[in-house]
Amino acid sequence: MKKFYITTAIDYANGAPHLGHAYEKILTDVIARHRRLKGEPVHFLTGLDEHGQKVQQTARARGIEPIELCDEADVAFRGLCERLSISNDDFIRTTEERHKKVVCSLLQQLYDEGQIYKADYTGYYSTRAEQFLQEKDKVNGEWPSGFGEVVEITESNYFFKLSQYQEWLIGHVQAHDEFIFPRFRQKQVLEFLKEPINDLCISRPRERLSWGIPLPFDEDYVTYVWFDALVNYISAVGYGEERFKECWPVDFHVIGKDILVPPHAVYWPIMLKACGIELPKSLLVHGWWLRSGEKMAKSTGNVVSPLDLIDQFGTDAFRYFVTREMNVGQDSDFSIELFLSRYNSDLANDLGNLVSRTLNMASRYAGSTVPAFAVEEEPEKELRALWKETRGAALECYDGIQFHLALDRIFTFIRGINRYAETRAPWKLAKSEDPEDRARLETALATMAEGVRLAVTLAAPVMPDLETRVRALLGCGETDTWEGELNWSETLVGKTLSAPVILFPRPTSE
Ligand code: MSP
Image (cartoon, rainbow, N blue to C red; front, side, top):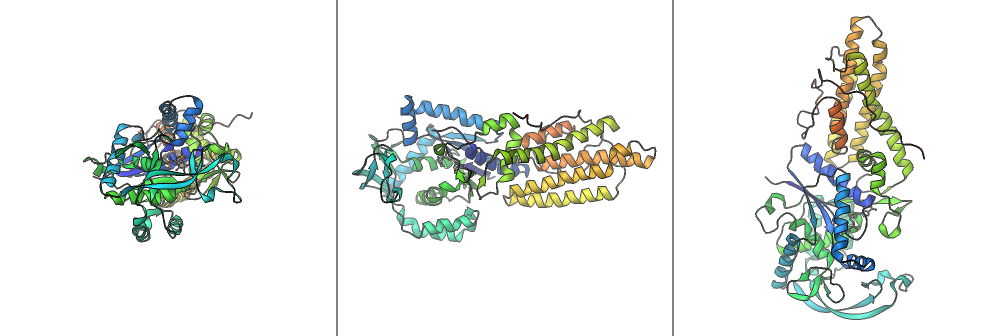
């Protein structure tokens, strides 16, 4: 059976992970977990982009070998995945043999078929940045001083016949609305394709850049880093082997908007088409995390370290915040004030308090054993109806990649349980001698516990550790499927609840 195959972009190995990288992994993880809970087999890939100029330069500046820098990044990015509870099935590094082998086989195929040719290239080259510049790099008609001396040079290189596929690609994008999500990004791609595209220079002379995969047909050159990096999506799942069919075509390549055009929407589909490989089903393009309106990036130094926030507030809180705040496809501004406000109001107040009061009251009024539902009056009917509505709407939002709205619905339900508790006021019912009030009290305790179970189970793709923890507090085991788990049920009746805990402690003021 074909698996649901989902990938993230592979991160550059020359910098520390920041909120942008963390977000992309969480977004992809939410989708992967959602699919698994629905019962689909999933393959989730992430990894590192290790070759290229930047890595070579950074390593040189630090007086270490490029591979040492990559090994450090490997520890940092795998560590990040672990801290974020990312459920990836594989982690690929582009320096691995399994990857290099596939890059070489594609290059050789294209070369043998005459789709790669050698030609001279003349352009403006910055020795300081060690790169060719384009007219658009000029500011007010001048090369910015950061580029140092800019000289015109001519260099022999290998080119891939990208341009001959332009019309085909336009047709493909127009005929497949699902190819680019969200839809509004399709326009951007078609806009880009209105201008003639050039053939792609896929090599760099070795004397200029040695940190790369040598071209199989000319050892004096290494492969251009994008041609190398994109191939990770197929090399990791065994391109050329029988098992490739289990994953390919990929269901979603999750990427940021900065790498849609041209790499993922132009180079990649054309590379695949040229090699006779099926195209990705969909590119899922997310926006940026900004700081005061500017893209968060290593180069601007305005980055937020996800690890600091996780140390202070925990993985689930971090995952909740980024998923709740970001409307997939749009940009979102990060501020610690906003983070604290979500943490305090949604997590500590609404959810944390609900869990602790549920456990507290069960311990006080029922010896910590969940009683049976004894009555069904207006408050119970209302809450059950709210659950039904929540479940329907949230599942629809999950399917439509509207995770911020799914969470909005789930937290509306959580507030609904809190309101229910206020209405039922178990602390008052406990004082009454009337047996009907005792039945109401028992029902209220069972209802609150079941409400909590349902809410955390529905939020599991976003807060997996919280789900496991709260279900354990409620005395019900972990679950790896939603099958039968999202129905209002009596599964908790008779279960022993744990003593009250504080799930989201108030941050200590500094
Ligand atoms: N190595 C390339 C991708 C190759 S994929 C075959 C690359 N690396 S990156 O480290 O610069 O970015 C990795 C991912 O993080 C990209 O999808 C990028 O859009 C995303 N983000 C980097 N900064 C970001 C934000 N500030 N906000 C959200 N995501 C952004 O590009």
